[in-house]
Length: 282
Image 1: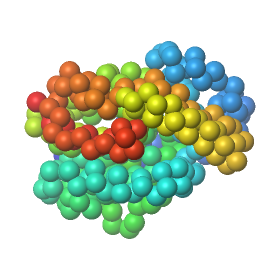
Image 2: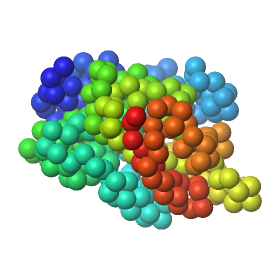
Image 3: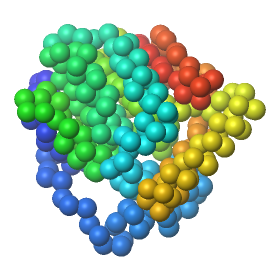
Image 4: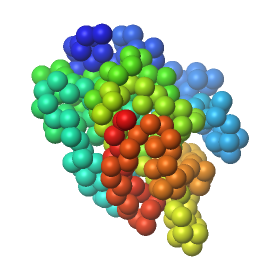
């Protein structure tokens, strides 16, 4: 498949979930489909424990928080999020004009824009399951930024052919996949052998004392912000139980190796509560 067939020619296009071009409709206020009404009614524990329905909760949550997502990540991390993302992109080693970069769980595009600046001439496509996130990312595009494309898409079922990417970046995304191993397998599928995977995410701290304190902070702070901003505590209160069910940093490194990667670098932050991984596709 030709390069432009994969990455498109129009930077501000928003695609449908199947990868086909579409115009994003206005969000509906129908009670049966409005995420602000759906999210509080969903059983968080049931959805986190069942991969078959987890995505329904995750998608509704990100639709709710999209408008304030960037502000939240800055406030919640005391401004450290920006530095973590810059350090992640510092590990990007495919910087040629023909580089194909895919940013998964792209949110409003932070990593996609950083990757594009770090690799002038590369084509970048960002995918997210939440349409509002993609609308937010597309709204940040400047005139002439036609080498960046944003599209609605599921990281476990990407509308890309095998070996169609040189670099994949994921910010806070693998943890939210219904099955993290399935997401890693899909990333391995689209990466060229020798391609790079760069991830930034929360992890379950290995130390039990720190784990308890870390999860307590995430639960209390997240619920308070969720109530204050959306009147939906679970909108950010989701983070703590999702981290509690996730892997430790070292367990994620082993999961990468099992999925066909060689871990090149791991940078731990917050005593293992946050980590940056750089891995090479074998």
